[in-house]
Length: 212
Length: 272
Image (cartoon, rainbow over all chains, first blue to last red; front, top):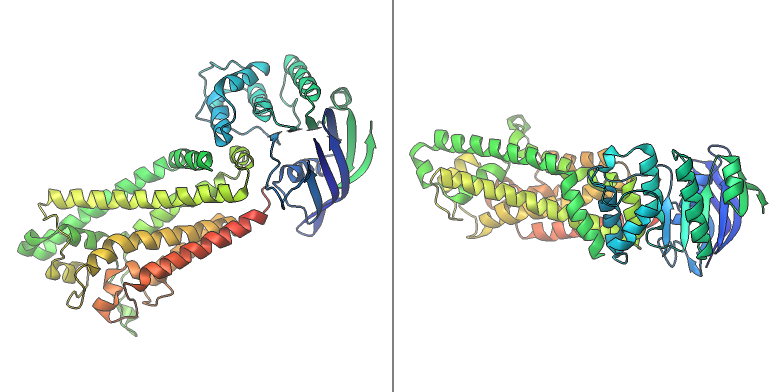
């Protein structure tokens, strides 16, 4: 499994958001995006997800070219910006609806994912009653419940307590050992050093440096 | 594909449930006014009223304005309200569903065209559902007023209350204009609205669709295709260039073209 970005460029309203992005992501590794607010981290994640179309360049996902062969990566789980779910349903029901679109994930797998992030699958509370930390945990469960090959997490430890951060580390480790590509963005420098195998520094939409 | 259609039908209807209640209240009010109008204006003749007469009063549309007589124009508020509320009801869900949770759905739909088809199916089902409610409630109103459950119009009633001369109307033409054309016109109009909403901004879609509706009340020209659903504007009644048989062709063309334009644009657009 690999994801390769070649000469990616994106301009919005004449302002260059991403430019000259050349990266290759391999399975079994955690990649971290680092940079100031507005440097293009989230935009780059959206490009990889197929939500944003680059003006120039190619996104190659295991031989499939995004926007040409496929609309979205075939196997991707994401948490980009804030977790967003249907407020009138429980966490389990929210994930069940999402899993129902592809219809490849059973209820037991969804429950397992919820337990992994420390949420009770039998919790009858609606999403609107969840705390920020619980919402974040649900967002993370949503990203990996279908065992995707590519996991993209924007600020995964936001709003999490210490126990939650430990859980995220454990989950990322598991995913890495399963050979998945994990891409994260994180403002906490120590946490990023701990989680990522490779850190990509972005500045004004360009890659400043890549550090192993 | 089936998964996304199921999701849209269930969550889409849930998202507009309050608007649907508002629509039911509006139709109840229009039917109340219709019942009173028929009884007050027609006196004894109203006893001969049929189901199609009631439908003509509700959805028949505004009177025909001959060229140069714009001063006789009266805004058909209740008739316009039906189209405004339908447009308002189908208007916001597709664009709202492109944010947050909807992006998870979109990425799981595998192809963008699946998402677009899901929204088109939802849009069309909502329009058909709303017209079923409208016709159903009008039928109940007609029954409550002891009207005959017939699709044969009463010339005097339709002439006076729905401003339509039926001398040259075909046998089934009136029923077709009143029962089929409003649904077809609104299906095309809602697709046009949804495509413009996605391509430009939501308010633009609403503005364009309702401009077509509003202008159709004044000008009897085929390009304002809502005219095909306005009984008094039809050629058999007013001698205008609006011919019943052209209506379905125009509506299918508008529906198909906007479906394609929407699909092509959505295939390339950024989701932020």
